[in-house]
Length: 295
Image (cartoon, rainbow, N blue to C red; front, side, top):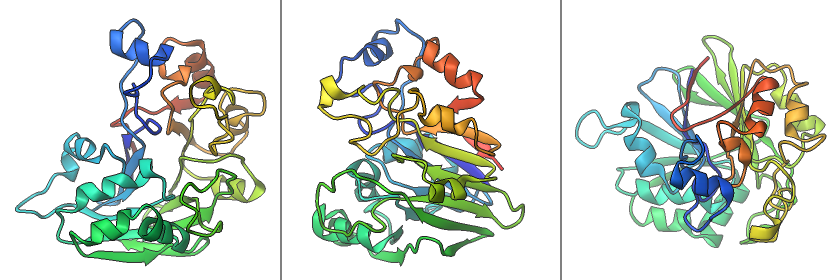
């Protein structure tokens, strides 16, 4: 199984178009070493011929063009076989509309996410006006085959973040995915949004080969002056505070731990920052676009 990070930033990307925070300024003027990043999404395959996207960001077109394995091989034959969604956030779903030229699209969501995308944001309803969409219901706890020896098991992620569109129910509003390679037994977990490592969430992470996990904010109050919300208000456990995700990840029996979904304000985006050094000392990686992991 191969996992490719298409986009490693949180919503808005890095630098964010309307932000002049120190990290965004450094990305623009080159005063500190750092890499620009697009909005969060990954692609998974078992054979490098058929690929499955998890989330479809607004930057999806550029992400596809940057990955030759995702290019069409002849005519309009795309190697993208399906899209799996962790939630109904605009940052994770707006890219579906960029796939409207396809002959058909298979979308895996929980019933709650599907209801929001049909009746709340209308993303799926709009997409269906352009191309046929097949919905595959995601049932947390049930293993689902994608074919080619690749399967997934979704799991519920508790969140107190308000539902902006208030259509779908609370259950299944946010999920993580445990991806399983039948040939090797190796697993990867994609968890771009998590406010707390509950016992149930920890059980899904145990013994996975690779964990791609929420690295949105370094501090809980990081966005208070800019957005009027804390990281936890937005459904994200901060990285660097005592008891934060970095402390908790160090104790997990996981082979490879990688931060994704990193907000433009997070100082660990700067290659020379103390925060980056603190992360790397604990054996955790900070993802950049194009990172590929083979399991």
